[in-house]
Image (cartoon, rainbow, N blue to C red):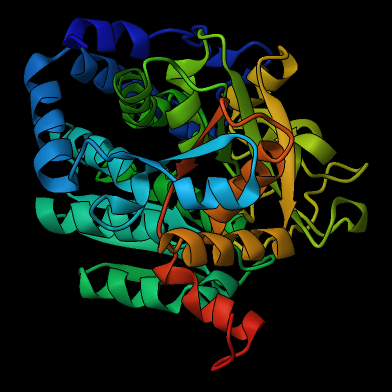
Length: 408
């Protein structure tokens, strides 16, 4: 695929001038941030048109991140389930162990271009924090990462990794101590320090232009997968599927495939079950509202207050979803599914036993839905699943569930 073809694919389905994808998105931010957001938008578009910027970004993705990541036919798992073939896009094999590095490379380069000396980020599962700290270390920038206290407990190894990389991890105790609270605190920091600080948002949410920027930096996932599928199998998959919290890995895979005749499926975190109210399924169980600078589907009560969420995977434990995914769902281009904590854990264990791969608990949600769907399909059909990260970071959680020292 030529660079021009890649560029054309990446720039499809642009938001309007106000940053809206259909009725969703926008720029709902403090007046003090309107200038910095306009500056950011101009810098992003200028960089995207700059051949030298793109060349450096692609060089780092190849030589530092390790792209392209391979497609892997999970033959043993597919055979054990029966039905459709499950094909994994191995984002777990990137440097730092998850898809998040694709975005932080792009935003880190943009921060350098804009002359910023400090970067901040929010993180839930810790992978975006690690990826931000990694890029900050490489570019010699000061780095502060906001992380909910509960997520710090769940993801202690990633907290240590960030600190080893030179970042300061700032605990957030307000609210539920999870991802939405970390994002709130990071936005407050940026309001006070935007002249010297670049905020590297980790998902396809936030005020415009962040949903567009993050989508563009992650589109490499779907671009590669599309070309690899055609080369390896001579056709495209029947279904493409990814887990969804905020939605960065989902948009990365699904955006380059949305004009193809493929079923696109987003898998939300059903937690203890949708009927319990203790979940993070913003599209399946939410309604439109404004959070973190954009209009999207949210989990909120009748008074507009954000509901508490629950997922065993910290990266999905968020009460909203990226506005472009909300628009795709509204337009009928995106199907929804969900997986409970227990289903994700069983998928984690099954992939480990059949293929020798430990998936992140986030990715395990998509895998659980893919396994369920595959059993209803025929062996000549194929499901592409974005394996967005590896499960090393989740071993403490998994050990506590299955019992330390017991056979999983």
